[in-house]
Amino acid sequence: MLSSLRPVARAVRLSAVALVGACVLSGCVTNEEQGHPEGWQPVEVEESADVAALVPEDIAERGYLTMGTNPPFAPFEFKDSHGEIVGLEIDLATALAGAMGLELRPVEQDFAMILPAVSSGTIDIGGSGFTDTEERRTNFDFVNSLYAGIQWAQATDSEHGTIDPDDACGLTVAVQRNTVSETDDLRPKSEACREAGRPGIEILSYDTSDTAATALVLGRADAFSADSPITAWAAERADGKIMATGEMFQAAPYGFAVPKDSELTEALAAAMQHLIDTGTYAEVLGQWNIDEGLIDQALINEEPYSSADRTPATRESSS
Image 1 (cartoon, rainbow, N blue to C red):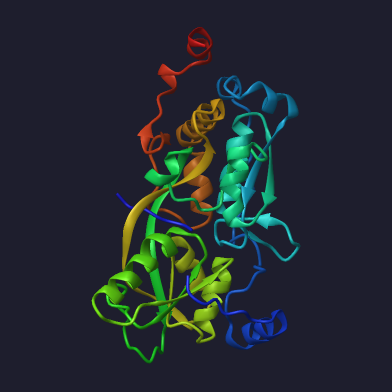
Image 2 (tube, rainbow, N blue to C red; image 1 turned 45 degrees about the horizontal axis):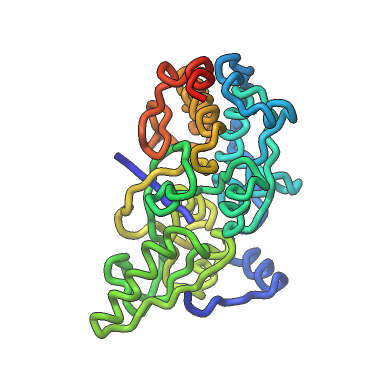
């Protein structure tokens, strides 16, 4: 099964003017993308009566679903040249909301603040490349969306030759702050280096994945650690300046975060199953060139969701 993960030493602070100027010269990833991939078309999803019946009453009455997200995290969410938040996860969440008879309203937030906002009820769900981990499941449920894994990148002309993610002691690695790439990949590896009497990894933590990738392009980092789709997207747009290195590792699922034991979890899972059954799920991911790691049934915390066992009538009779 394939998988993917999202997602502190000294952080490098670059002025916006200097960074933009450097990006123009180097062809690096930027905070603003062209937008949708070539051939992209909006996917229209009609309301499913069975799915809509599962939506919590307060959300159904207001008619929209709020989702906390943290662009740029291309291709999952980023801003196009008009400042609109677009991306694979936005398209998928829009389709899920459509099946529930709702409009999606993305809410831009700092990545570290999304889960607390979900927990407090300020927003309905979190969708920003969240890895479904056992630790996070303590307070949240995850309606899984796909699988991928951590993938490192390096400069194509690196002075270190081919960088091995399993032998990176003494190197400087850029990463998005508070992602699984930082907490479960770089920090443990750096600590293992020091325990072995070797220099630790200098971790450059940034607020966004594109800024971390830019640090690699500009030569401020030796490598970049991120979810595999993010690394692939960055490499594709870096004009040959960076490339993937090493194998993908640390398999884990992505998921939309929902408050623990919320009724909304069931509605969201039923919507996901509806999209899978109708082929819309594969269509949405395919438009973003994602054809690996797809799920074939709706999952909650990696457990199969069975709509046959969890109908509105069953829910009402047990409440």
